[in-house]
Every structure is written in C-alpha cells, then in structure tokens.
Image 1: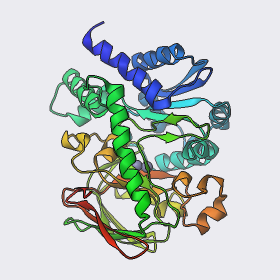
Image 2: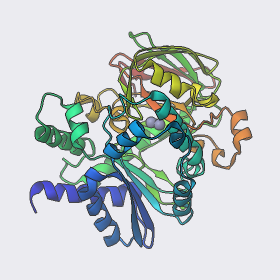
Image 3: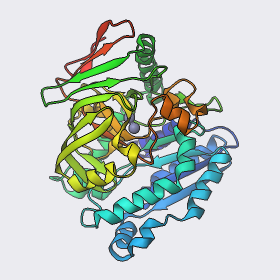
Image 4: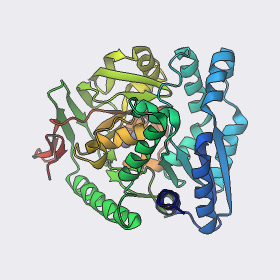
Length: 411
Ligand code: ZN
Ligand code: ZN
C-alpha cells in the first residue's frame, strides 16, 4: 500500500468511526457519485470491520442527471418517486447511519431550465420531509464527507491539468479533515474539545441579540429565541451515540428567532445551489423576512430558492466560524458548501434545527412557530464572514460582549 492509499483508508475509517460512530449490527447507507466508488468500497470495508450488519449504496451519476434534465419533460421533475423516499424512511426507522459524499460539479446544471431544477428541488424536499425530520432531529447518525471528482477539481483549480487538479484537491481535503496530522483521530478529539468550550461559553451567555457589522455593507441584528441552544463539533443522537455530521466542521451554530432578523446582509462567497452558482448577493430583512434582494450572478436561482415556500424567506441557522480557520487560510474557493460554510460565518435560508432550542424535537410545527423556530422544505447555508466582521452580543441583562472581532473569535 502506498502512502496515498494508506491515507485514503484512514480517511474512510475516520468517516465510519468518528463521523458515524458505527455500532455493532447497525446498517449503513452511503449516498455517492459513481466516480467515488473506490472510496465507497473502503468505507464499506471499514464499516463491516467495525461490525456493521449491511452497507447499502445509493449511487448518483451526474452525466445521467444532466441527460435527464435535458430530455425528460417537466412532469418528471414534479414527481419524486415515493418508493425512494419510503426506502430512506425505512432505513432510518431501522436505525441505519447515513454517509453522504458531497462532490458535485458546481456548474453541472448551468444550461438547464432553472424551473425544472426548482421543481425537482421542491418535489424532493416534499417527498423527503419525513426523512429530513430524522436527520434534523438527530434521530439517526449522519455524516457528510467529500472526495474530489474530475469536474469539481478542475472548477476549483481551473489553471491546472485535470490530474494535477484532482491531486491538489485531495491534498486540500486531507488538510481540512486533519488527515495531514500524525494521529487524525486524536487531532479530531482535541478539535471537538475546543469547539465544546466555545459552545459552552455561548450557551452560558444566552445572548438576546447578535449585531453583525462589516465594511462590505452587512449591518444586521439577529435576535435569538429564548431557550436557544448552541451546538458544534459533534452531537449525540437520540440513541445517545456521539457522531460528527460534517467533516470538516469548524462551525458553532444555533437558530435565530424567525421574526427577529432586521437589516442588511451581504454575501462573501459564491453559493453552489443544486448545480447553479449564486454570487455577490445582498439581502434586506425586516422582521425576519427577506423583503428585498439583489444578485450579480444567479438572480433567478436565488429567486426560486426564496420562493420554495414561506419559510425559505426566513433564516433557520446562525453559524460562527473564524476567518482564520484552516479551510479559510487555504484560500481555496471550494464551490462546495461543506467546505465554504466551514471557512466563513454563515446563515441558512429555511428550516432551523429543532435541536437548537430547548424541547424543540418534541414540538409540533405549530409550537415551533410559537417559539420562533422557522420551518421550511429547504435549508441552504450561505456565507457572510469577512476579515473585518464584528459581532457584538447583548445578554438578557443588557450587557454587551464582543463575540467576533475582525473576523475572528474575540474570546
Ligand atoms: Zn452551518
Ligand atoms: Zn446549515
């Protein structure tokens, strides 16, 4: 085994042991592009070695996806197959773990009718609603990791020949998931501990509001609901198994009060939304709702995203990531939210994680609404962090505390 193969094997182990934390007799579902088959087999091998009962793979082929969009009629995209959603629900009920490999070509659908894409996103969100409840409430263990594909790598490094671009993207990914450290599992334990300390501090302060300002024009006050909970690093699922949902992960996050966001937010990184880019956009919020927006690139895509449903026009996540994170310092624009969100403070359009408020997982939709929890068919992160972002928190007693100074943690 050469050095690369060995690192790859360890990376697969990391996803299985730290990411999902697979339990004896558990099933594992892997969502993956066909290009990543070698890596998927390593994950399966590792999962079986750890006692998994079965590994099921849901394969995707981007070339087929594109063919379908170019040729199939609109109605195909308005009807998500129920058998597929049922299958995921069944696996979740059986307590399976879910690994997704995020490796999409950010420009795959640039020549496709955006209406088709929007209809497809909407239909799949509706069909997968029950399954999303499982993952967003931590009723299952899930984990997102990445592997380079040729199309993605050449978008990230357009000046390099394909082979070199893939190699460079591998290197970047390995760095962000700490595979370049001598003992990656130990490095993760330490990283998770540091994150835990930040989470503790924020939960103790129980900020009423966070005020964001930046020279790019961002000036927004975000109210946090009573009983909000900050989370980050790893989480316990409802079966008390500790798992890490994103690898890499640098964020500490909670939910905003649905109707408590006022001001202007300016994006700082392009957003890859379902195969299309939205870039340089600006949102104006009033009482939580986007009342005005502009975008230099992808205006139509942004419009469709906001039109998904009423909740898509409101925020569901407030995440803090320091500007000097390993991912951010790599100065690579990944065009992949898994990486770009972990290089930058971000918000999310749409649904909040019910686990981010006391008792949230037991609330029905009506109760969530009453507590300021946003519900929506969608949840899409977008990046707002910059090198001069300042965030000042106000505690319930009116004390003002600097949380971020010049893009980094102030404490
Ligand atoms: Zn996030
Ligand atoms: Zn998110």
